[in-house]
Length: 303
Image (tube, rainbow, N blue to C red):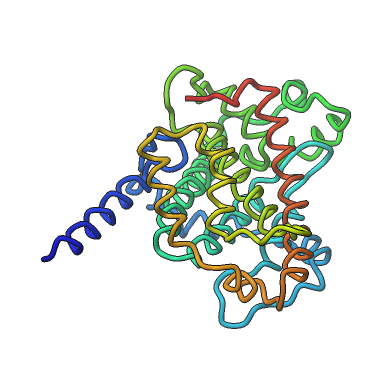
């Protein structure tokens, strides 16, 4: 094997290793424990997103592609609930589609998606276990501690008949009530896992926002540049030096802008801007609601 081949192999091995550190700067893989029940959980947590699909009308299916922007938008639009809550089933379904989006960008970026997929699996696994062991029920007098805004009453009526992992706020209350959240040490709680996904969602939202921009005088930056900029202002703040270097290596291999036209079935930058702005707006709503719930419960810095 030549020197160049050895170097390429070494870089690939490094990326494979650092992919597992992606979302937290020192990530822990839980493939064996979390993937066992994945298929079963996925079947139990299918959600009909008819309302979201209605509001996503006008976006056509892209034939021959795994990622579908119309499906992503329908999941995102179905996620907000009440006045400040987030439904977990369509939230996780949105991530399923975002994983397909990242995998479409090539094997290097696809490595990142594997870690994100493991996180969604953890929450689904916890939801399944909660359904099988519903020892902590959501009670009317305790829902108030979770939903503190003007929609408390509506949230209470909807949540007291639902499962523990019905929404972000119900999950927060149940995990706090059961002592599953540790503010000083790493745990496998759904809240800690959600925080990692939450940070990654901000990175992707900012990347899509930048990709949609059409500067008047300046040249269009490459997707690689835009993704790097989005990363540096979001996830990089939570990563160690060698993880940041690995991320930048992955971004170098990102496809050119024309690939994104084909990925969402558009012909030019203006059409891309219109579609991505709809996705960004829906993502921002989900992000802001999740941010508020985590912030109210002091969970933005869970280890």
